[in-house]
Length: 248
Image (cartoon, rainbow, N blue to C red; front, side, top):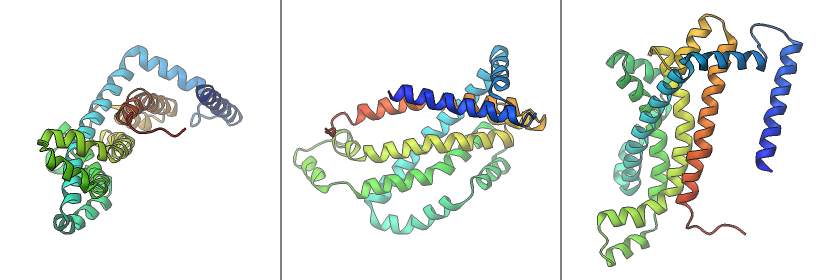
C-alpha cells in the first residue's frame, strides 16, 4: 500500500503538471513529455551519466569529510565543557556564514579546483554535524562508561559497545540532514566554478534558456538521491537500530 500510494501521488503530480503546461503553453514551462524527451536524449549521448557521476563524487567526498571532522569535534565539545564554552562562539559564527560566501572565498584562496570545491561544501556542513553530535555527547549515560571501566574495555570496545550505540540516533540525524544539504550546496559550487556536474549543466542551459533541460537534469539527480535514500540510507539505519524494541 505505501508503494501504491506513492505511485498514485506521483502520477497525480505528473497529470497536474501536464494539464498546467497545456493550459499555459510556453517554452518557459515545458510539459513532462518534453522533459522526458530531453532526459532520454542526454542519457543516450552519455552526458547525463557523466555529469551525474561527477556530482555524486563530490557529494560523497564532502559528506565523508564533513561527517568525520564534524563528529570528532562535536563529541569532543560535548565531552569537555570548558572547550565547549570556548569554541561555542566559533560554531555559532560558522553556522551563520552564508554558504555562498564560503564557496567564493574558497575559490579565491585556493583556486578553481576540486579541493576548493569539496572543502567549501564540507566547511558549510561541518558546523551542523558538530551541533548534532555535541548534543549526542552531552546525552551519554555515564553509567555505561563506569561499566566499561569495571570490565576493562579497550578503546575499540568502548567505541563499538558504549559510544556508537548511544550516538547512533544523532549520527543518523546528522547523516540524513547532511546528504540533503550537501548535494544542494554542491550544485552551487559547480555552477560557480566547475566545468562538469549537474550544477554546471543547469548553468549552461540557463544561459540557453532551455528550461526542459534544466528540469531534466534536476529531476534525474533528485531521483538518484531518492534511490540512495531508499536503498542505502534507510536500510543501514534499520540495521543499526535492529536491537531496539519496536512499538507493537
